[in-house]
Length: 79
Image (cartoon, rainbow, N blue to C red; front, side, top):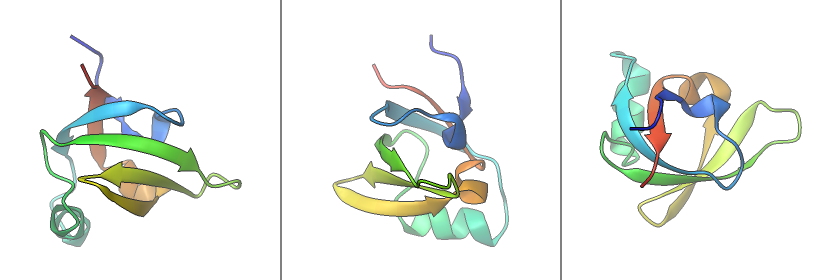
């Protein structure tokens, strides 16, 4: 089994699977509403030049996340 890490540490073009969301506040609700749920496969498309945000593809949609939001998402490499 792959090692779990947070989404902000992922490399560009990485195919990943969400394992859990660690925040229980407004950020968690926002992520769930965007379709970022445990068990969902995602792909990191790229990181912003100043490393403040990243672009992911989830359920066929491209989304931009702030680094602090990405730190709340635990992932493993997709199989």
